[in-house]
Structure formats: C-alpha cells, structure tokens
Image: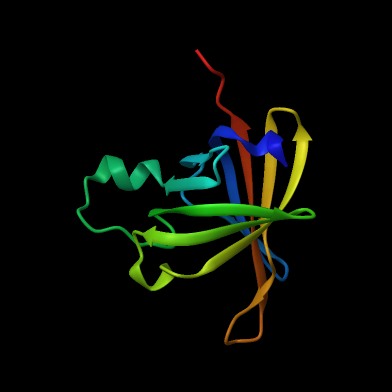
Length: 134
C-alpha cells in the first residue's frame, strides 16, 4: 500500500460499541498520521478542547494520545509496531487497522473489534484526509 505514504490529517474519530456511537478526541478532532517510505510511522490524536483548557494532564484514551514506530501492511491490514508512546503501557504493542481508501485523498482506518470486560464489542473508525504538499 504505497499510497499510504505521506501525511494525513484526522477528520473524524468515532467509537462504536454495540448500538452506541460517540466522538473520540473531540468533534472535530485534531490529529496527524505520517507514513514514510522506509517503514517509519507516527500518529498524534488530540481533542482541541483539552488543549484550549490548558490542562497539564490528558486522558490518554479521549484527549491526547501519540505513538511512533514502524509500519507494515498485510492485505488490507496496516500493522503499527509501537516503539514509543504517550501511554507507556502501549510500548511494544502492535495496533492493527483495517484500511480502506474512500478516494485517493481520504483514508478510513478501523480498529479490529475488541470485547470489553463487560462483554460489549467495540471498535473505532478514523477518517483521515491527505495533507496537500505545499
């Protein structure tokens, strides 16, 4: 998926759990995702309302999360191999995202469905728009 290479801006981020759906990282959210041709990647997701409040500490699941490492692709799955992260427990993990191009400049990444301790299934859908080169 060479077409992933470049910088992407986060347009929307919604988590779906059973029959519920809600915005994550604000509405609209802020975020940037980068893929390089040598297999490096970085991602930043932020709720602009958190930044405006000026809080020193952010909720790592809904207000600010960043990570970087390497990436690879297998069929329509993008693997993010996390080497550093704002949430230390995530270091060393692999994030899997199902990739689907809406068009050449819009990319939808969907997390693999997970089941919570309460037995509810959830996943997050992130829509990214390619950042135009100046």
